[in-house]
Image (tube, rainbow, N blue to C red; front, side, top):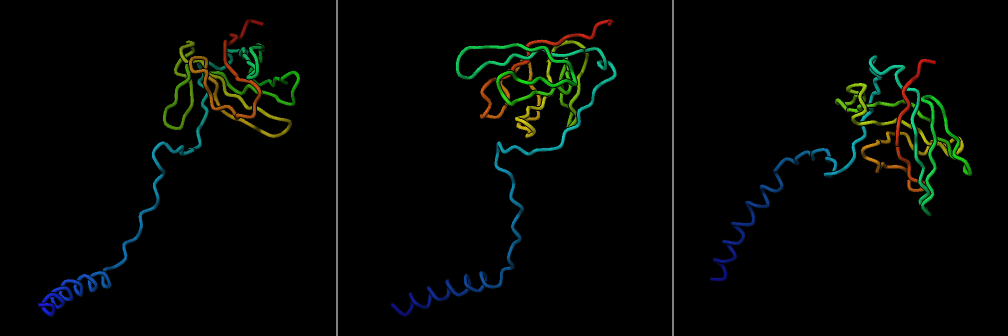
Length: 162
C-alpha cells in the first residue's frame, strides 16, 4: 500500500516538475502606475485672441499660515511681486477668466469670469519653488509646504483705455 501511494505521488509530481521546467518564461508586463499616481505630462498654455490684451492684472491674497493676517496685492500680468519681509517673489504669467483644460492644452473658453485662474511662478531668491495655477473658485492649491502663507486669487483687473 505504501508503495502504491509512493508511485501515485511520483506520477503526480513528475509531470508538474516537467511542465514547470519546460514552460517558457513569460515576459513581465511593464509596471503600471498605481491608482491615484500623478503622471506628469507637458501642458501647453494657449492664450486665445479673444482675451489677449483684455486683462491688465490680478489681485492676490496672501494669508499668513501662523495667524490671521491677510495682505492683498495687485500685480500686473508679466510682472513680479516681491513679498515684503521675505526673500520670496511671485511672477504672474497669465490670467484666464474661463480656465479650461482640453487634453494637454490650457486655455480660456471665453472672456467671462466663470473659472478665473492665474498662472504663477514662486521663487525663493533665484530658486523656483512652484509653477502652476491658482484658481479663484478652488482656492486650495498644491503650493509648497515650506511657504509661510497661503495664496488666493481674489480678482482680476480689466485692461483700461489708457
